[in-house]
Length: 288
Image (tube, rainbow, N blue to C red; front, side, top):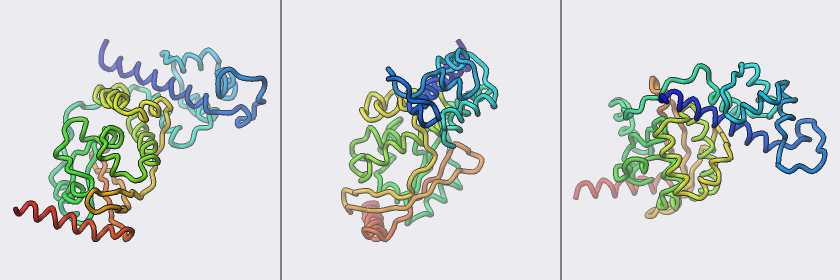
């Protein structure tokens, strides 16, 4: 079985699981159907979704089962409408069912160009780093290292944002709002990773996180997707205490999967002054 076939089958299974998860979240009265008698399982029945979308029940069942059936863009739109998908979920649905199948993504290392590295270094008062397609931290500046930790001390999957959030206890303690941030970050990662479903590097990372984190194992099967996150992050630094940043994400031109993340210190908690103190201490350590 070729790599393209394996990826296509993985995408079909993921597509079916996503349909099922959205169907089970709906309440009949939300879509204009009578509540009826007591249901053995939550959400809508398959025949009810098929009725709302104007498609055959057998055809829809096969979609949920991950079988090789064809769906036109019009049929996918009808399913999205029937399942009351929001814009992020609708986009996710279409990405998973992309036809023709997407090209196998390159498995080689991602390279951050020197101009971007020089720009990172120039952001002396703003922690910043570059993320790759899998949310690996590919490059970072000194400010990011003194606030979030030296990424150079991490190797392989450890230098990955999802691994840091879910499987690194030190980083978890750093995040004051972990309970709010973690599930939203996972939903955003899922939306970004849809186009790479079946990719061995992604699958390895996901399986590692499912083994390492009870929360990840519980939340991943929910198939939640989200495109936006609050642009504020509060941390409790082991030396300087509470710090608050505003952050923004920028796509890197000509490298679509790459993102530049920049954190700006806010006046709250004296964050700017605390960052300056950390940078001075780091510079003094280098001069010893």
